[in-house]
Amino acid sequence: MSLNIFRVLGDFSHLASILILLHKMTQLKSCSGISFKSQALYLLVYVTRYLDLFSTHSLYNIVFKILFIASQGYIIYLMATSYKPTNDPNLDTLRVQYLLGGAAVLAVLFPYQYSLWEMLWAFSIWLESVAILPQLFMLQRTGEAETITVHYLFALGLYRALYIPNWLWRYFAEPNHKVDVIAVVAGLVQTVLYSDFFWIYYKLVLKEGKKFKLPV
Image 1 (cartoon, rainbow, N blue to C red):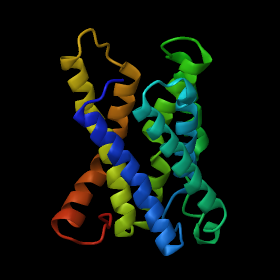
Image 2 (image 1 turned 45 degrees about the vertical axis):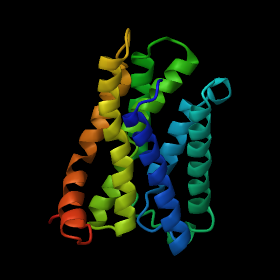
Image 3 (image 1 turned 90 degrees about the vertical axis):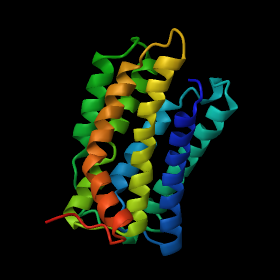
Image 4 (image 1 turned 180 degrees about the vertical axis):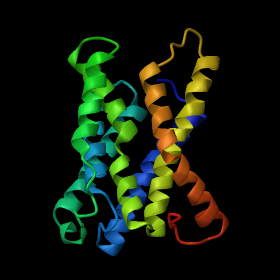
């Protein structure tokens, strides 16, 4: 995949979201308000998508792939060990087996090629589109969130939203570019899932400087 400003901004927004989350956890020594299920799904997304790590020829891609896998693995490690007592599993109750099953079915039914690598890549794309659902469901149950947690979610959503103009740029600027239908559809699904969150974030956190709280 070639680089353009939207792709680069999206990747750095993605990395920023992870660093924001790590900063929150290490500063507060807590993972309260963070969905372990969402974080585990994201780790699975990175591992299944970046199996081509050692065959990648772009230094940019290699660095980011390593950063995503390592930082996400560290988040899971902290949540499963040092900060485990601060995690409330009674709030993190979305049944992720349906998300895993749905992504697996779509990956098997609609891969670009029937090879293990292509199906794992498709699985990671579909799974990423819904991996945030446990976190959003958890947020809905609690009704509010710490500001830094909300910034993490905004940066994560912004990453995917920036990939939309990236796809448009590649379509119009690159000759013989083929539309990646799976990535586009999954990305649009993910952006739609964030739509309500973006509006509340803008209205309360950015515009009014208030604590993020879902309307009753």
